[in-house]
Image (tube, rainbow, N blue to C red; front, top):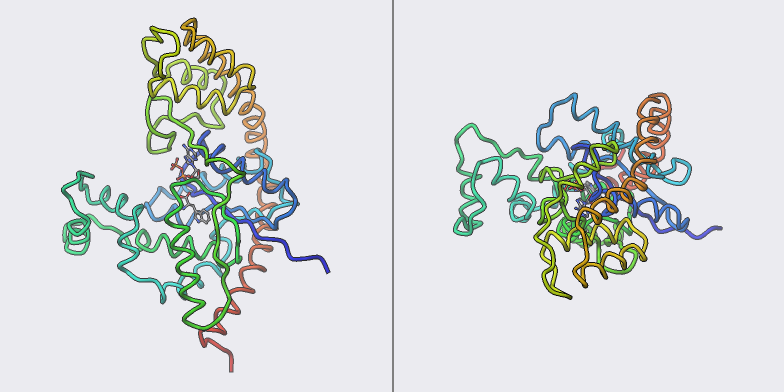
Length: 358
Ligand code: ADP
Ligand code: TRP
């Protein structure tokens, strides 16, 4: 009998089109893991998670479709990976109910992503003097019509369920998801210990050696992110993309040989290293070191090399988005396979917890 393969699972929330940060931080890793051929892969679109921030229904529906098209266009293959939408698996909300019986309100309230979003929803600034206690008091005591919904509080339980329901071992995600993953491990350990079983493995993040990439924004600082408004999208056309890159923040240029780089220039080199050949990177690094660099040329090169990656993907995205029948077929097959795996775990979990037929 063939040995059971380790299970890989990851997802992206359906909150907008994918950008270069999502591509290098997540999607390109999904494709690479799939192509290694040694894992059983599950990749999904987290539409329940997107609901925690109350999106417009039309926008949510369109975003699910565009992310599925982006997954497929970037190389995820329904013959090699189970590609599905979270809400197509009704076992997930049932297990979420069961798991929540073992999750503490306190630990959920202390989650960094929850505190950030709750602060935003309540309009509380992120200033240092607002201690966590103050924020918790504000959330519980708040009697204005601003609400922090219970779905947002239980975001980490739902994410743990996504992972545990398939007994995944590896979860390729960016650094910002580490805390959620740590909570998943804690919930798994707790459940196993409470019932004296070995049902859930403890999942780990995955990177192909080296530090996880953080794709910078084009505005001189920080990371590329949907809420930052500094994104290059996989779907940007040539003109839009070139314009964004040519407008990237720079500085006055190196005044002396071998000067240290300022943040905006470091960011441009980070992008260059991601998309360009090593000789090209060397050419511009040397030009920076001897002060002959022209930032216009650097940006033109970056734009050209990003386009080499994104334009073919963009064409495939557009074609797939026009093929509703294909998308429906992929998702039907994905849901079927995801449900088979999920229902097996749920059956065991119900049995363990005492929910049994007569
Ligand atoms: P955003 O930050 O744009 O809202 P998400 O939080 O939906 O993106 O992230 C989806 C996936 O993409 C996660 O695994 C996340 O770690 C990764 N990711 C997002 N932005 C970046 C970035 N700038 N660099 C590297 N990875 C990123
Ligand atoms: N929370 C993840 C993000 O914001 C999305 C996500 C939901 C996820 N469930 C998951 C990622 C399970 C990996 C595994 O990016």
